[in-house]
Length: 445
Ligand SMILES: Cc1ncc(COP(=O)(O)O)c(C=O)c1O
Image 1: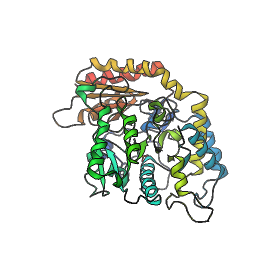
Image 2: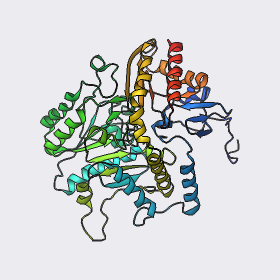
Image 3: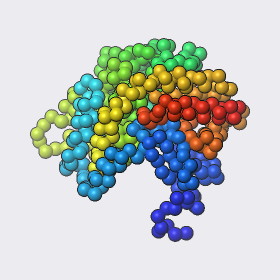
């Protein structure tokens, strides 16, 4: 078969692509193909619209194929395709870093750029270790994540991550890792809107880990302000502040993984602002370019940057980086995206529509089999009863039905539908999302 012609709108051979996080055979037997996108919609090869209730994969926060982002990428591609980020620089790398730093709270003033959330997670963990090593605390090597956490798929990320299938086939992972307990308790939190009242005390488990390992061995704690991939679990009221206090008490670095919560998803540039907590590092990706070009990064506080960057000698400060750190296309896309967020007030918009969204989404409570509904910012998750043939099968059927029968894209996690539409979603489209989910919940029970 010829591999020379450019791909047809409908490929007739799906075999070669080993799809990530996908049941390949089930997909290839009944594909969900997308060929075009604009604003709130994807379009199938036949031209059928698919309402995007998940911003692609939590990333197209400004909506799809927005004209200024497309134009910025096209112009950059024509002007300069690539510039090495080691020992050379290009203006947009510095401009975009300054723009991102200006959006972050406190003295999170410096940005290390990479290409994905996974790279951002591993970068932050490496910076934490190197920071302690260079500041005379080389015994601080232990990294602490949280059960049900997701920090991408690098070895660092899966080691601190807390989702069993992402870890169990991949050997012994990094040594010296421990985990906080997750913060979900259905009995105490079911059907909360926003942050649940119960659960701040779960942060106290960090005190127990300090008692067990001793603070002098602990480098950093990494958590998502809202655990996304496990099914959208918002932080309990006061939980993140408590973690910050305990980290301060023992000299432990606190890292927020804001790969999902960054760039407006919870109504602020970063969720750190919503929660009034300044972590030592923030990882980001996805919404930084509205998904248009891969990009990720780590915001670090001044004291961390200063620990590495302290001399005029021409010696490398941090032995870490990626060929495509600060790729010109990504920087151009990000600058245009950040302009759009600002011009259209999209982060503020989420704050305004959050109560409307929450009320609309919680209406699904009356549907069959529903066990819990959670909303925070512009995120909604609905848990429902599993089928007797296994966890996740009912959700897969629902996702297929939503795509083929209702023309809508959602995420699934076990038997949970998670939705996170682009921040430009209209009120009538919010209603459409809830109606489509409701009809499919009726069908899968
Ligand atoms: C919280 C969080 N961290 C990290 C990642 C990994 O990002 P990527 O898939 O870009 O490597 C994700 C992806 O969903 C995420 O949700």
